[in-house]
Image (cartoon, rainbow, N blue to C red; front, side):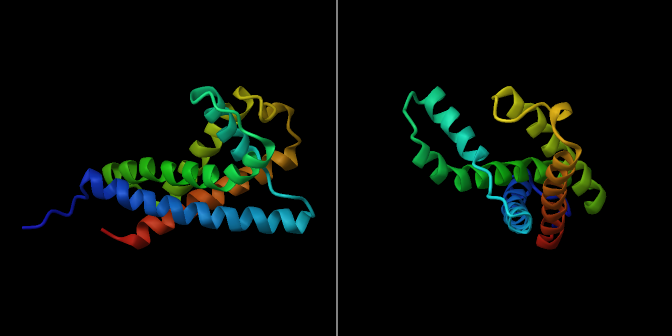
Length: 155
């Protein structure tokens, strides 16, 4: 008799796929928002990649390489959070929409700690409210898309 429980490996794989879908949706939203506001996209993920490569691997990263790192680092970050989502979702089985919003808040909160700690963003209390709201909206879109994708991928 087959079990209705998802194995940990299946939950991670499904979460990684949902993370990839959520990242693609978030990226499309970020690009559309940047275009609507007449601004360019951020190279912050590439700067994170630079810090990791220079700090861990002791290899110099040029500004040109930072630009090339931006999309892969952004994608890897979003996809990797999907694995955590998959494990939690398979373990707790909360409602996807509610869990997607909570997940979005968790990922956003992590960025509010990580980026200022790296000197790549100001602390949230120094950011204009409209920037905080826009940044949260990016993460909310991501979290809801991950939840929807995870749910659509089925058991």
